[in-house]
Image (cartoon, rainbow, N blue to C red; front, top):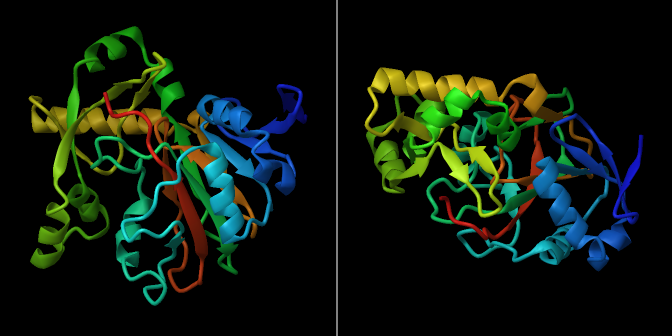
Length: 278
């Protein structure tokens, strides 16, 4: 059933714990009239879908800027090509890590707030869905014993750990390049300024500090399995023109497999982070 947020923003929840369609028209979205409601809904629901909204790159940038500060890419561009086609994206191999559960920006003191991804070309034979899980809800439903045991744990994250998911025997030069990005310690449980708590997990996490490696690995995998149970997951089956936005501070995501020669192409903008890991 279609509902309305603050009597102005038409929406429809996609699952109980994560994912909501926003059914406002393009003109209203670009005007910024719904910006406050969209931000509030994003934090509450984790993933927002704007079905077949058909934004151009310029419109996607403008819409992003109604919601906060646009975060440029490393080369200064406002929009990023999400494709495995190396003729379009010379760093396409790096995107192979996106097939595994992760959140973006674990190497940054302040991770991006949100990503906005628009579909342009999709595989003709299917595949390439994107899955999201709600790490707020996953934390909330842990047992009290788990919450107590996890409260002080910290894990080491690195880009090179995710490299070994898709390239378990990397060339030494490749490994050095990824290791040069560095590593950092992050809490397993992120206590946000709002008071809410979420889990920081994913393929960048290698081990838990001051815990036996075997036990730490078991803990990280158990928590990942917990957070990615069906009740916490929304799987988006793309149509050309869809825009999907997700809260990078309270969700993880991954792409589902597809033919790398299929031409699948999406375009991403980002909202700059507003809160450091705590």
